[in-house]
Image (tube, rainbow, N blue to C red):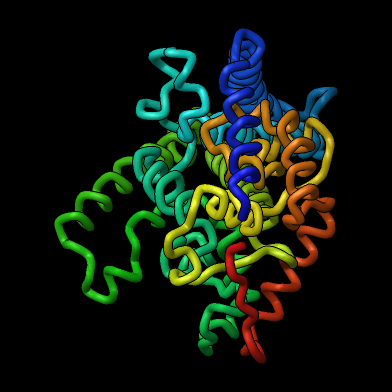
Length: 365
């Protein structure tokens, strides 16, 4: 890959770094205020729905009113969690907003509404995944140790269960992510330092306990005899968040046309070749502004992988310029609508339950 390719991307990145300012800061602060307000409105809505139960017998009591308000509140709570995890938490933990010098909004201090400790996420995601994107044996996000997402992964009879495992991972995605930094494969092979394992596991336990107590004990207890309804609502909101997160992440990494690499492919990799691998290993999802925000701007997965510490609200501005650079240098730019990216991802996952005839190999340019 020519040096001028890397130079153009570097110049684009530096321009937007230097251009950060008040408008970017206000974007994040407004988003934080909206997210907090939405969670409170949704949680109040959950409790308000209890007043509409038919058993109270007043003029507004009805099963329809109860289920309608309860459902809307569950969706509202799920949206608040999606904003918290994706456009806010994920991007703060990447250090995208450290430049604001806000003592509370820092990548090394932020904790999110998620079972995964933020410090472990920064290691498994920011360091391992973003450095070794789509390199087999180095990027553990390739199938998350459970799924076969590329022909390059050796087939095993375990993958016959893949359709079921895809559903399980989508529904419980938060908990798969929470355990990701444990590196269970290394533990099973006896290669992990037991002391390190205990330390990681202890941190996960503390964070998981906090999440379980908050969502599945304290909030339901406030409902007294209606404990089960509020508990179910919290479970539903978390599952909706999990499925959405799973879908966005998988659509950004595993649709048709995405490339994977072997360790030998990246030997002596230059800056331009690193950029090239990030582009080939990521996929964008085209959509409107609201869709991009709800995806954490991971719908601009290519730009996120090129510039992971650039504020996410800059990705829509950067994307057309990155696509133009790719066109001029003949680099494939995998961007399509949500239906195409999700459809080809699911078809790939289904196809890979069976052995592949012959894997294709891609060399960095």
